[in-house]
Image (cartoon, rainbow, N blue to C red; front, top):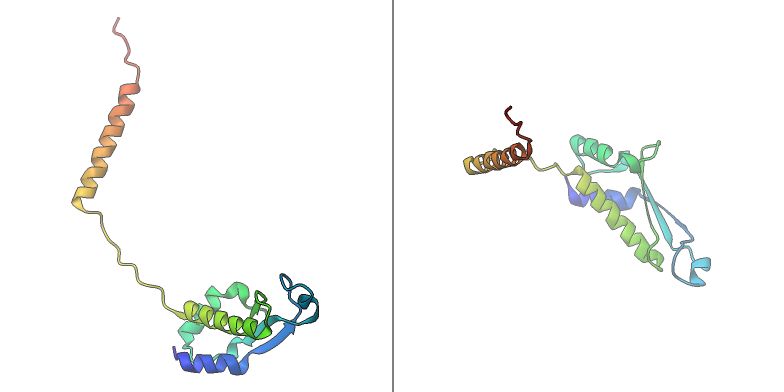
Length: 139
């Protein structure tokens, strides 16, 4: 993944729309468009290989629209510029995390001591249960 190329393509190809935000801000909330919605077409992303793009489409499938666009919105702050910066950083973080290969899990086996401990515990549990059984009386 080419991080610098991805960063440039995000800022160049993103479509920003502003609207009124909900939440704190008093009268300011009713007057200023501080909510930022960031929309970017996946075909406009550069710096990702085909495999990384496939993982991105798979992991972020719930955030991708029918017209193949990724949409992020930010409205937590009272400043439009701050919300815009947060939206871009969230978008970049999401894309890099989704494109990253998952770590390979090396399968391990339990040690000899762990196996013996498990069998010992099972034996004890079995003896407890067998002790609870009623012993029939001999006539």
